[in-house]
Length: 213
Image (cartoon, rainbow, N blue to C red; front, top):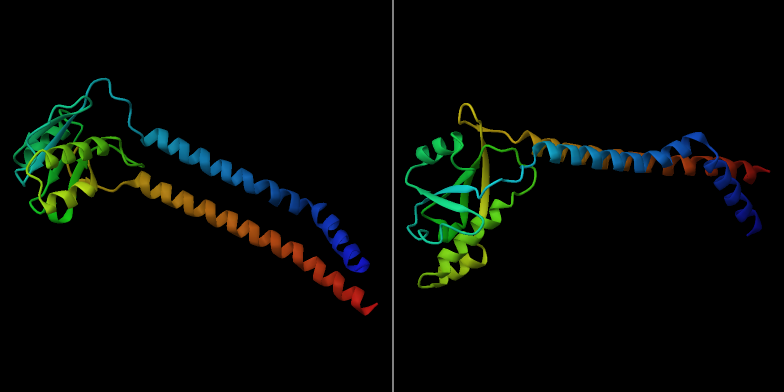
């Protein structure tokens, strides 16, 4: 028992005195902090600026159920008939975004949302859209389908439109966020594994030497 304690103490003291061990131990929190700073910087770069006035959100209703409660305390909902008209209004800056309620909305709950802004996290406007959908659904004669949809009113699929061409683009900021998170987790995992391996190898060698004595 005494020999085991002496060996363990010797290995611990030897390991913690190594420069590589100290650097590796200090690098883990640095990597975590660096990842958080990068994420915060991207969020600030891609985030929405606080609006100076109540925004207007366009919508196209292919169900015929959503024609009330268009003027709320936070948002003005502007109805459109055609997708091209709403898209042009968005590109002209007359509305902040728009969404399409398809004819099979009560069955699927899917709403197609279009914006020109870079988005990393779900925007606050989704809450306003959800409230708009729920308020209109429960204002009519409530059926079983409507009650089901009230419980799950929104499965939003967002698309970013290019400000110049109007074409659907790729959300590079979101992809970068996922990539940075994966790299940070990978670095932490590799550093931890390397630390464990370095701590074990000297112990095996010294135990073997002591066994031959």
